[in-house]
Length: 221
Image 1 (spheres, rainbow, N blue to C red):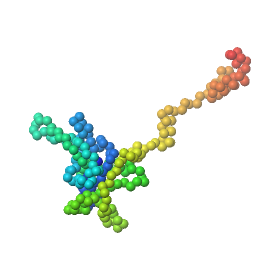
Image 2: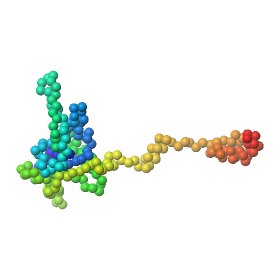
Image 3: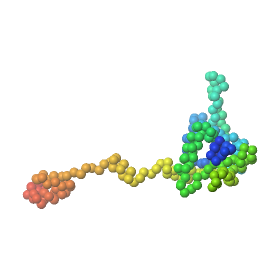
Image 4: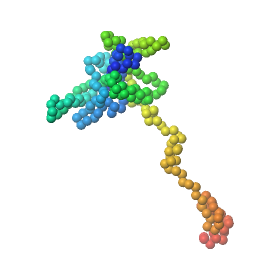
């Protein structure tokens, strides 16, 4: 899914739109399934098709969504429209948009292995008057912002196992949990029927009886 992040100000003083293609985000973060069809959840919005150049549409996942419009008059039914979209957008300058995109970035960071570079959205142009051209913004050693030509990054999260999102319990924790769940039986001593002798097993008591009380053992046999 091609995602446009609007008004994302990080390394972006001119507030140029940013783009990134992501596959494998939790669907319930973005879509809502209804009897009538699939809807976009807020704060996501459909991106405008004319803002997506043809040479990057191979990153899109065209799909149909349902849009609900309020009734024009009281007592009337709401209006439903089904349309195709190529991508989605989110406004980082709103509180819901900022929170959602921060969650997306955190999910990506926790899913990708630590030895791999985390992709970042690229700017759509140098400034608001320039033609479409994608750049990755970076800070140099002096802290100045520089733009490097870069394609729209694509990341497939489905090929990773999100280890951090569901941590594997440590061995000590598993042992402690199992011990608490199914405690070992308390040690039990077995007593001789003929004297005060005790042993931790019935076999030990029988051996004692055979040696120390042979006559009694013979009678019982």
